[in-house]
Length: 367
Image (tube, rainbow, N blue to C red; front, side):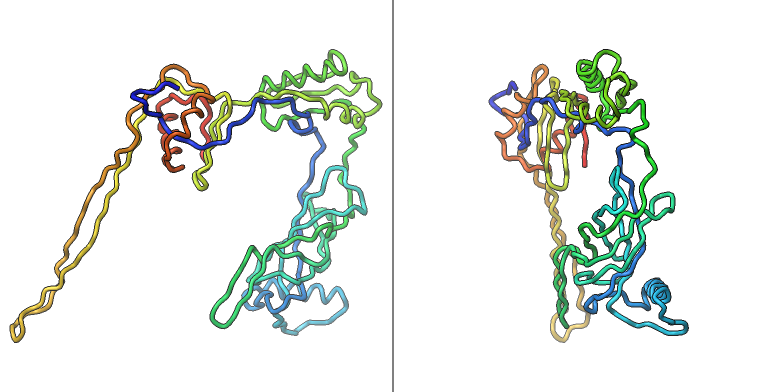
């Protein structure tokens, strides 16, 4: 980075990404058919210590409780419930690829009524359905709440989120997804971050391992693997070899900023063209100092309030005008970016302005 009059363009504190190293294929792609499936169910949590739903505000809680009792042989027709130790919840889970009947999966429980805490509660047997409406698992068990709350007559305290929780291994798989992986004669590899260069390197790496024609790049996000060309006995055997091959991925030049935390991350291929930068700020201060005017004793008149406003504009000196000559690499940028003590918001504003000027040769992402 070249500076004018000894000044640095801008200051930035950022992680510097190391040069890309070979990565296992299983960390770069998703294999066709090897995926999970989302499950959801509607259930009831019981055994709460007075932190359940108010049945008047959550009538669906009374409906599901009556349905459960009816199935257990308890006649509640015409009865009215007013318990405060039950809560209606939604139960979610992910059915992993190749999950078999009898296996167990984790579940997440979230209150949908006005319950204040699920701590100490137990989820009653809840069927979990897939997108096709079929039941694939059944959940039940004691809940580990995600927080705790305590309430007194005049104050309350809450830590975490007590209205949601988990049950580790809380659901048992009752149905399997119909998918015969062993019958596949071709498997597509979907890149998590599509890139033509990375896809070509994957194709070349697989063909180097199994021979020419085993893999074919279809587009920037897909590489097709021919199982027969690999000479392996089954797709599973081929995948066990393929997923451990190492490929050096190619990444787009990116600058990612998080305005909430002030975090800024740059890729190693980021370049900044010739540009001049000057950073400063204005501060506008408006103060109201009303004055009360009232008549003298024994005089006629009324007391009035006279407005008085003081307005002032201050301009910071800011960062002097500086210039970058030619293309500047990340290493050169980072060398000078820690010199000035600018706040993260100022750093992000400078990067936005450089990008708007067309001098930042990278994808600029604001979160």
